[in-house]
Amino acid sequence: MASSTSEAMDVDDTAKDRDRVSALVRRYFAQLTRGCGRPGCPNRHCRSSADASELDPTRAALLSLELAQCGDHALCDELPPFLSLPLLQQLCASASSGAPESMHALEASLAEVFSSAEALSRSFVSSSAAREAEAAQLAVDPSELSGVDAGAVGEAYSLLFSSPPDSAGFTAADRLGNVVMRGAHELLRGRGAYKLLTEGNCPLLREGGSLRWMLVLMANPLLLEPQHHKPVLLPLCSLIASLEEGAAAQVSRWWSHWPESALARLVVVLQQFLSVRLCHTQRIDDAVVAATKVLGLLYDANEAALAAGWRRGGGGSGGGG
Image (cartoon, rainbow, N blue to C red; front, side, top):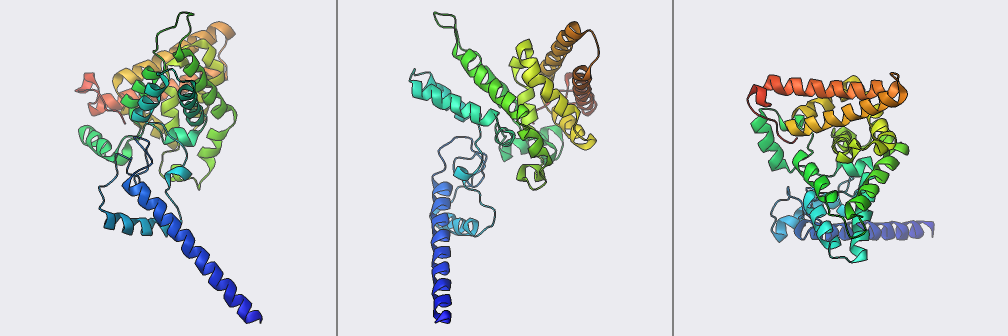
């Protein structure tokens, strides 16, 4: 009797496993052939990704089965959210129609991404083809690039923060800026960033991508405004300044590949912060030391770019990675 019960349970478990794999295969097939519908998806196993391969139904079915049997799944609806420039343009265009639900959708996406280091590290990522082209231009290995599209990041911030005021003097840019900065403050205050950096089992950490979110946040032009210094810029600088030597050097190398104009804006942000801080405190405190260390990384990045010939002084400006 016990043997019959055990056999019945084994059959039941086998059927459940078969059903689970079949469901995964169907989800992967839809993802590989139709995509998740979000342009610029960073998941290379998604038709909406710039890195996606053109697959016929047979090849898509075979790859779906292979992916379904893997231990680590790459299903878009189970991965952290992201933003890309095309997706943000789509969301902003919809929000500009005036429909409240469209603006709410844009705000929700911004809040979700900017409050998560992992989500922000998956955002504004260059395609493989773009990284290879940039690496060839800079004469470096593609793995040395951050993968962040500096041009897309700049365009994204311009898109969000450049709307004209309405009759009452308010702008959508003010509203969206508040959402972005609240998200960044939540990310830094909640120590989610620290957790991401210290979890050795995190895929982003293994891929070297767990630091990318710092580049995106540091490029935010709103950091020029003193009201954002204490809640966002100060903890961000403190975190960058506290990185181990190897990680700090990696961030500096990534910055060396960025356009000269982007580095110049970062220097202005930090100089503004130091001026305001020193004027207010009249002393050199931990905040001043942290910001000065970040300025040092930018100086090293610029020197490396000049030495490699990626700046005007050495024969051209850098790329975006």
